[in-house]
Length: 264
Picture 1 (cartoon, one colour):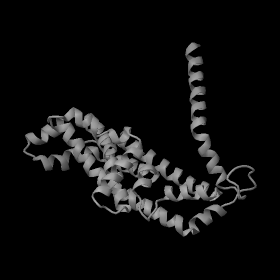
Picture 2 (cartoon, one colour; picture 1 turned 180 degrees about the horizontal axis):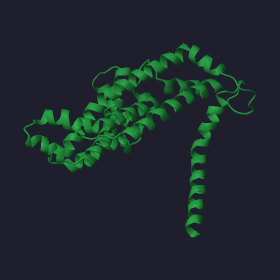
Picture 3 (cartoon, rainbow, N blue to C red; picture 1 turned 135 degrees about the vertical axis):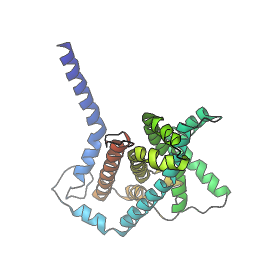
Picture 4 (cartoon, rainbow, N blue to C red; picture 1 turned 180 degrees about the vertical axis):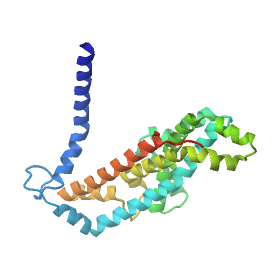
């Protein structure tokens, strides 16, 4: 009986926490369909008008395109570097290995504004003009830790037996990576790419400090909120929530396993 009571109490506590976390998002999604011009109550009727306005807004659509470019560029930088670093950490011993494992995680620990200020100073000192490229390189280097963490965790699960067997059969380092390691970590690699893309799409602190004249979607939403809050912001925010949820869910499923990878 105590077990049943504890289980119900745990479920109730979990429900309260989930409600606390996601109720504001649910309200935003519901109000994005509000026919009225208010971002809040009253709900005057169901309408898709704000989504029609969203897709007709050239500024927002251009910002969405910029966000996709930044996300793709970020993944193109962070994923190869993260995979190489993860393989190096898993397969080789070198001086400072333990320190490197901790230092590479700093971008996850430090506030985004600190990372953004550091990168901004670096660009200014070197005379680099702020643009989408600076955002891509900034986010790409900061998110190497995501790819490294996800791939390294999969490599630890994989072990060394298949890798060592391939070496015993005469396979070189490149052949071992392509034919043994990569097929076994492909889910983690794709998962890390999706998670990095979702973080990039939502990033505002680093983006704000490194952006030039071209804005991403979070920056445009921020500027809209500063001028006038309308349900257009709710519609844009809903799109971001949906995109992020899809990317993170798919990324976590792949990176945590379950796709039946086998090194055979």
